[in-house]
Length: 97
Image (cartoon, rainbow, N blue to C red; front, top):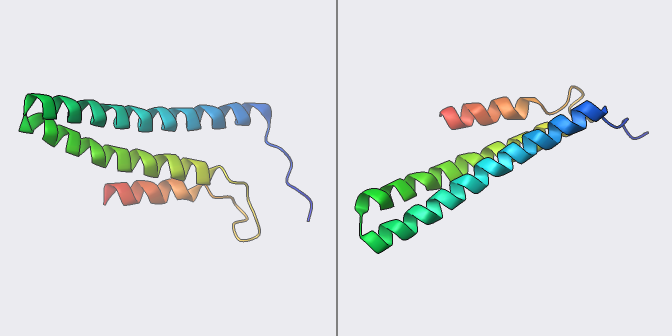
């Protein structure tokens, strides 16, 4: 079976932007969680520690977003002739639940 043709240049740029945005979201969530944990421990503030714990959920959801975006960009194959784009929709349903 021949390899699928490469995506058009604009589509490659779009993919890079989407992945970069998802990575930035994940990195921001991790950074905020770490900073809030340190500040909460140093200051003894339970409110700041609770906010840091809330950021753990943000890290999880950002990871789900990143993985679903990456999977949705996979090209069509024999099992998925229309591509993998619905993975993002399924991730959205998971996050909403």
